[in-house]
Image (tube, rainbow, N blue to C red; front, side):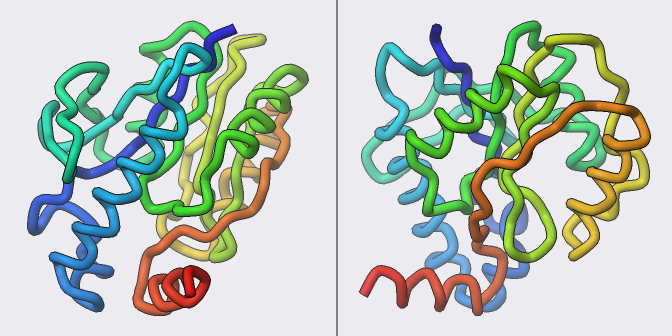
Length: 196
């Protein structure tokens, strides 16, 4: 079975993406980090086993350092992250996973594990170490209600708010591997140390 993957990202144009990180490490460094990570992820999931798609803003074509992306791009819709995810959910009919472009530790084994968890759950969530989540996937085993009501985005409460909603709605979920997303200077410095 072909596994459908969406990489969600704001394209690295000044003023549109990673505003906090850009202020702390500089726009050009943040841009290079994002483009390198998009390239790395694309190469990991290039092949017949995966359907690789980009869920982007603000336009539907761009270029990294060595790859031009002009197909399999969908423009993000919605006023917050939950509505954007839900719009993508409503546009699909079969299982998929969605993750961001700021997670350098992503590899095929982690994503395959997430798909395995969808075999017995409605939703799979990849938690981050700061209280958010880096991945969410849907199985379409049964119809589910909007699970993002009153989620406090980009806070330490994000994951807890989501799982509280899921429990209340009796939506079955499981956790994939906990990873770090690069949101600020400390995250970036920790990541750079891990490379040395």
